Amino acid sequence: MLRVNGIEVNVTVTGDGPAVLLLHGFPHTGRLWIEVVPQLATHYRVITPDLRGLGATARPEDGYDAGTLAADAEALLDALGEPAAAVVGIDAGAPPAFLLAMRHPERVRRLVLMESLLGRLPGAEDFLAGGPPWWFGFHAVPDLAETVLIGHEAEYVDWFLDAGTRGRGVPREIRDHFVAAYTGREALRGAFAHYRAMPVSARQIADAVAGGRLTVPTMAIGAHPVGDTLARQLRPFADDLVAHVVEDCGHIIPLDRPDVLAPLLKAFLDLDLAGASRLSS
Image (cartoon, rainbow, N blue to C red; front, side, top):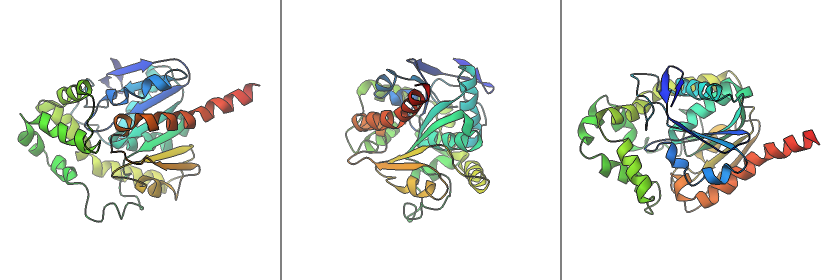
């Protein structure tokens, strides 16, 4: 547990080398990355926090907008003595990763964004043609989802884990951990606070794009259902963008297809190691 940006953050640090910060989404914790971390930790110092309000991290009343979450990430790097890191974000972890790179590019060596939308930026019109996913509205109404779901958290989390792996599911130990992390009114409130802050996050993202370009080398990774939507949002203002869509993969890429994701991440992150090696030789 580290005191970061005014809250207690639960974080796991594995391996040695250049820092890699992994930011999870909903309904996950830092253990989302359990299949990927060992493959990265052979060459990197891998940092996997629970986001504000989620897992074992504190659940303050506010601060769930992407800008504050980006400040949490920056303060976490400070607390760990890391001047910069490669930053990877999926789902709710992608907007703060993006804002950190836009606001403080000197802190982000490389950026990976997965299975998320960036506010209301152009490029997502096809994906949103039928409206946003149903749970966005459900989670956004204050106190409603908490009241409805008390006593049924396991069934609700299971639905997302099943849908996010196209029916394949996740290991029982990880499933039970996620269920425990999202059980109880306060745990649910911390989770849904991220959705209730989305209008603020969307404005922050729009302001960042209006004021500059994404200069950090970036990789967008999609699967089902987001596909190439995120890459289409990024392409107009990203200086250095590569994109991949993982076939036969659900939303929860790190648990559904770690066999594909880990090599993609390693190849992209290792470009920094290769560059550093050339400079030192």
